Length: 326
Image (cartoon, rainbow, N blue to C red; front, side):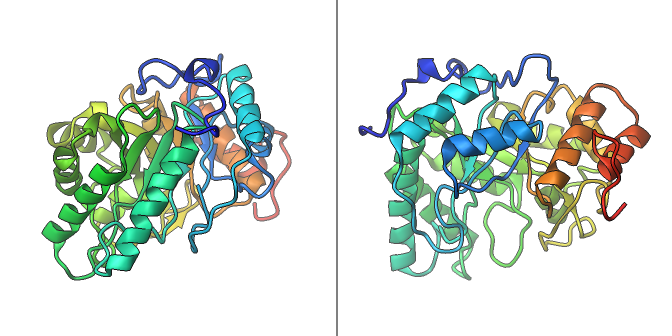
């Protein structure tokens, strides 16, 4: 796409079927958290390794503004090599919150399209990974108009042959958010010309707040997803507990095991054959040490350890030292 695409897809170790996330050898799951880009791409990879992660998420640009740092092709290439060496699963980048493809303001829509196109181009320097985004808020224009604008925008920015898969995120249904139901996401998918470049990221907090009982009926929710959208579209998970009851439409994340979903929900996710192979990104209200504990707990659950053992890891960490709040 440009000279920023400095490493071919074959060099990443992530080539082949975009749905196949192998993760690190010897690890049952691919799991990580959201990391800061402030020190560069390779630094994020090293930070991920330090907390036991084999994937991670990052914002493609300022999440609340819209500006983007100039891409360093050498830094991107160094991250690709690190991911290959340590057998990372697919990375799940996140578009900025300010990017609203279905705003009622034409200038906001135009900014969103330009930013989206630029972020896809930047992601091609890390070929074969994912770019996740919130579909947008229709701002009282109505769901139909919101979906029309999102489809129009995606048809404008997606490039045939791009190596980045764009993921629609499931939303909680706060305000006028589009994507609060599987049906709304499917309407977007079916309207996009190059839908082979699209998938879905399921956020556990969001679907709970939207009214899908993922905490107690994971298989039923997955069956519904398969019926409406198709499980082949499910490419990644945001694993977050929720501060809210089922169907609250509020979107407030909580640390694993401290919210209304409960730790058993995540035990089911990391052991379910339909979800355990997906890259899982933590977006819980945590510092790095907290993410390390959550990653350790999820890995323990995936390996068949008890909920009690996982809870101990959340409180003490893998080194056995108690946290300040435990």
